[in-house]
Length: 369
Picture 1 (cartoon, rainbow, N blue to C red):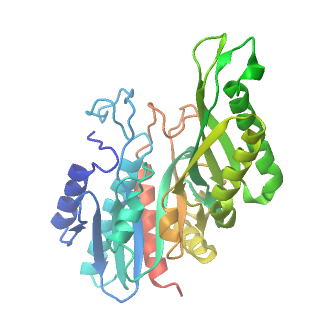
Picture 2 (picture 1 turned 135 degrees about the vertical axis):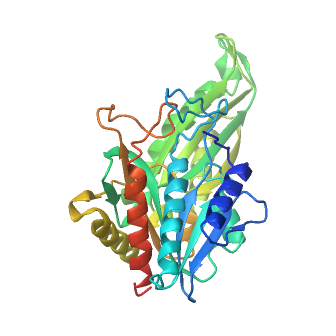
Picture 3 (picture 1 turned 90 degrees about the vertical axis):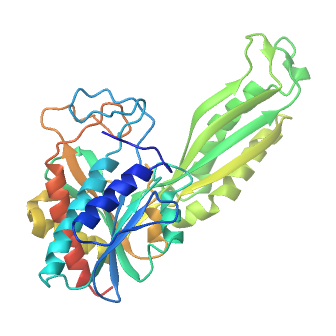
């Protein structure tokens, strides 16, 4: 009911810290105060569990008691579910530790700003969240799965996501005499159609690279050729290697296409997130833990998503895996998706998520990482 946008999760972080403290734990607010870490148990090797806390700038249109009280902000990606699950895991692990039944140390990571290009994962890593960590695990809401199911996958799980802005300038003029201009609308059209097609011939198809333009603007009048235009795209890819090589290749292809038009081009390529590549052994650990917690018939194979997830930054440092937690509401349109103003969950998913991640922590503490 009280969502906060990326980099502004101060009240959320403080609330999480208060609940953990009340459970007898010793949480730590990171330097800016919008993230929390909390170690439970003892040991030199740490297994980490991560949840994100930020919301999206969308109006909450649900008619439910827990509807957002903040105008224009709502948890349309389920990060409130992720945070609640990890809080429940912390309470359970704290009880096991009191009983002497926690065979190692688990670190809870409550992360800000997953929805921001300026990733909160990097903020947490810089603050030492991965110190002594040998493996890390997370879950994400999946409305396409019925409540009670979890989706597990080894290897590519989500795509890298970068942004590309192409700005063209050149001589404008009358549409009756395009030969006297750089015809920027035509030039932008070539960029939008030809560059994605050329990528398909320059990158191994198994890399899963996709370039899609979501915005294009040039001119106002139907009979005037503008002297400036811009197009904006996302570049998504499943391969780490292809992702590392993408900026140079994309920029060169754009310049090659524009060169024939006579326009001047400026390419701004902004790095987003790497792809989430689930570790094979970590995936096996969490799949086994989910089966033990919920029953083997409730563990299914997850599909690859071309969406982005900054959990990938943790996996650049330590092995780990992310799973999908079924949140689908019976009788609700199966086309419901995250990042929509009407996004909602079957709250029974909280219990399933807590049990799965508690079992994961215990299994990972005994794994040979």
